[in-house]
Image (cartoon, rainbow, N blue to C red; front, side):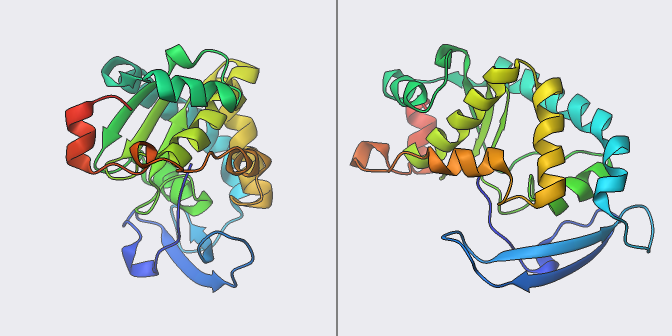
Length: 213
């Protein structure tokens, strides 16, 4: 998953109370931010305590989105299949990619607030992988992004289901933060460079015409 941080005014209105403050840049990534959020009220809560209540909803939402992408998405072409194998995917032929204007957000306001708080979703996130289903925003389909998301597929394959993988991934993010999550660090470490012109970010029009992620 690829994301950046945005000012408070750019965060979606979810009925939650947001407090945003900037954290000094410590990695090669863009400046990071930390967020506390009040879910369903005015008193900030520790998301880790709220996590068990949200988890079943998160799994149901992720499985529904994945099923839609598998139905409507496009299989990888030969070059992308080769890259997927390089980063550890065992069955790249099962991957489907759906190009979207923006990533979907859960309808439930509490789940939406938690997703944005953890860095999983939000206005600057450009890629999301749920099992073999990938959503990538138009204009961001590149070798680097796709290989990053393919590494998340490889992680998923090790456990075999969204219902098994998502709790481990989310629990880690809640405990140590998005960029310190071992799954995210592993995906970043397996990114392949955009070394060739035909593997660099395509324009939305080119992506739609080729329809071959």
